[in-house]
Image (cartoon, rainbow, N blue to C red; front, side, top):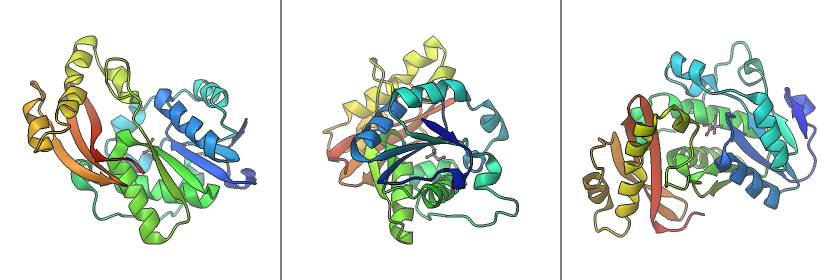
Length: 254
Ligand code: PAF
């Protein structure tokens, strides 16, 4: 596995699958690496903690970083190239061009500026890496919707593949933020996947999920269209940790 820091070093040949990441790898990332491995000649994982998608400097500073461990995980999962650029490679001095998708749902409303940062870095990575396919997790459903929208609207030749959410045995969706939960908070956080799951099949899934939140007060509960699937998505705060999750209520991911 090669680790490269600049775009000219990428030197890729064959069909490339890109997994954009911010590191702190867990089994959800590994599932994306494996999916990319199965469908492409070359698997590239980008590892870049994107400052433009954080609203709070403190959140950016607190983001978990352990490159040595991430490189081991990536190598074991069959990644060929880790692209870990410094910030100036993505945002050179004088950078002034942003991708703004105008419809970003309740998640976008809750995090002003977040999806502008996500869409911009993804388009930049697509231009530098030139993948045929790019892999995203269903857990960040609104992110996948936004990236697909940018790709479609701007005619970017990348297939955006969305892979099912990976969960711990207790049902909590894997996230680097879960490490911040105390044992008591983690127990309360389980109310989120349970409420969403209990609403599958309900006539009004939004109302059913809200009614089942068991003491959690959701920032939002909404339905999203993601490829061929209708997804019931919600965000909650447990202590100081913000968690998002979603389940498919109709159709299949495509
Ligand atoms: O999901 C993430 O880790 C990030 O939002 C992404 C897609 C790597 C863009 O920085």
